[in-house]
Length: 370
Image (tube, rainbow, N blue to C red; front, side, top):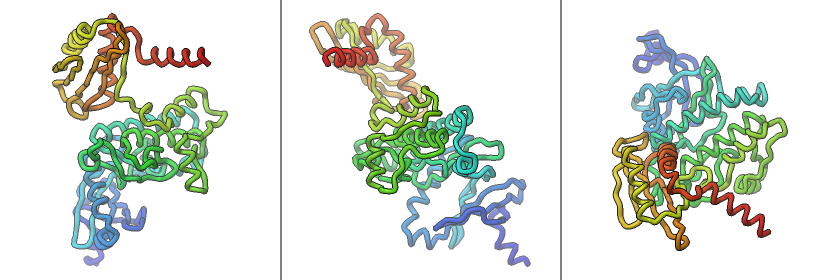
């Protein structure tokens, strides 16, 4: 009897029924013998992990989850080991997968989908701020707790920026579930983990509102072609604003999804432009380093991804017209856009045309010439 009891105890946890099972692991319900709180324990067989060369993936999953403490991400409490097993103690959630909710109840109304999408974006944005990219976001990996709140799970394919981003600043491992994978991941030329995750979020939002996938084909090559050109149609019951929003996320050009630079034109002399930028940046807490018509602005206060560095350059495009490029060199993209918004409001007397106005002018010019 005592031997049987020992087998059902791991550390301070009393093991219960099996609640999930995969190729390399079992997940068991358990309770803390100290507090009585429920947990889920993922049990991996060391021999199987080594035999299938999964050790690095397991190490990465553990390292990733140790970094993340967010209300919409499954929590990792601790990791234990024996001679033959690895025990990963996780938060226990009872609401099942978001995927099951769609299967059983069909598509969602916009208000309900908005709630889950906002929670997903909050979680993903937090992960990105910690240098973690999930790379396999899909409704099957989104769980619900007893109150119906979303929990992102399964970081087995995640990437950590310091470890896996190569010299070109991009990830290069093709992974994920085909229907949810961004076109740049399939191109095999390197991709930004944040924009790839954002694409998957867009696909998830479409599935929540439509009840089916935007990109689907029994032939894998046809599926990849549809994804590469974003060939999909929104159903008629989606509102115009939602269609527009999804279309903006599911843009096959990742550069237009996560912009890290912006620009404007000015009719002021370069020396005046540089002076005005310096005067605007210093009160915002930035050190200014100047060299000719280039500047580097460094925030003395660290943000979510360290110190935000901004590079600016003034380029002459006509005798009395200059193009000013403002680019994020380091740090968080969201913080960069907040900074640029503050900067641009201080440069109203310098700016002649914003980037949006330049693009509108180009479109009107093309239409007129046509």
